[in-house]
Image 1 (cartoon, rainbow, N blue to C red):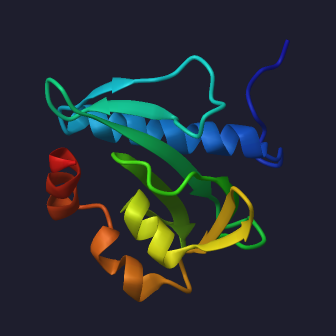
Image 2 (cartoon, helix red, strand yellow):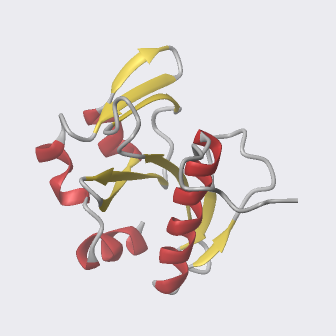
Image 3 (cartoon, rainbow, N blue to C red):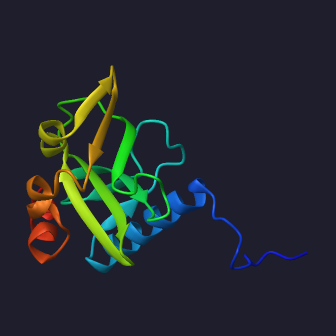
Length: 147
């Protein structure tokens, strides 16, 4: 049975999404966080991250590959406004470069647009200026660790 992917095979969207999730889990672990992954992904939470002995962050991870039609737009995101401790990790592949934005729920609400009740959309490209401070780096990791 052949299991390896040949170069011309298309990678499914589900596999692309899992790739982003696992890459982010690895980055969290490298930063020294404890990461807990829910068995069911039906509440918009891909990871619970321990920030302190009594504090957790809920993180929803979204990824877009350059071959996607609108590679910098994330649509149909289920989100309930006002959730404390809720973060988004947006992963885009821009011109062969991985770019991560770590966005609080409050920041998301001010930048994203509500499509219909309960679903939202955000374009990383159109909101580049508003998201500039959210690009993942040492300063943003520090902000995340404080919740």
